[in-house]
Image (cartoon, rainbow, N blue to C red; front, top):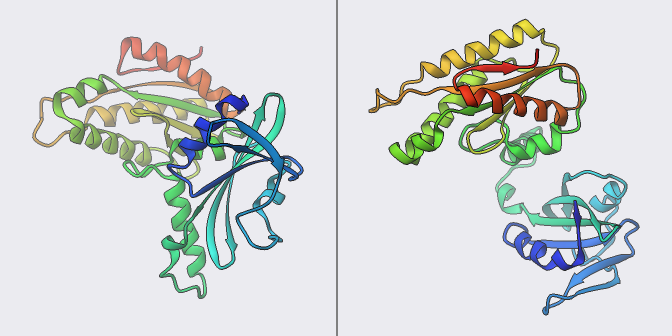
Length: 278
């Protein structure tokens, strides 16, 4: 992320809504940037205020040379913490934006015996990476787990046709019903080895591994057909459809998404269809 020091006060203010603490430190953990009450930025010697002692397994120590967003769970002074590490380019210099929130309340009633702690963290990771409405992966999972992969050989972007009309005419409750129904259709028609992501409001991204092109097309055609069959309680006149753009080749996930999205744009001009490259 590339920013200037002038933007830091807004970024820190917004982060305080979600996280308990934040700090901006350099890549050798000697300096930090502090936003003063008047909005000006001061650079000073780094002093860790998150713990009263040096942490042997400090999140920062593990991630200081990583150039991607990362998440860790730490135990410091008996307190469970979720720490996010975000690399920043501030006026051409390398810094790290670290955000921390206490999650002890999430696990305070847990009985840490056997595999219970593993189950607990699995539950927390699900909360972190799953879309609460549709129960498929969220945008955060895409950005942190899928974005930089170069192993998939198929990708599709799906957009619900006329979804704004559905919300405006029938209300957001029905809109949510449609979103959940389409997510369920997607899950029912892909393999456990594939990944479905709610990428935006009514956009879904699907990533496939080791799939022949003809099989990919058949799966996506079946998804469109199942979406056409969705029935909305109390509104039998409401017909649901979607448009899909897809690509088939081995490439970086980010590039697959861009090309699938380009094909989706073409599909949306027609609606209720598939579009891919020749």
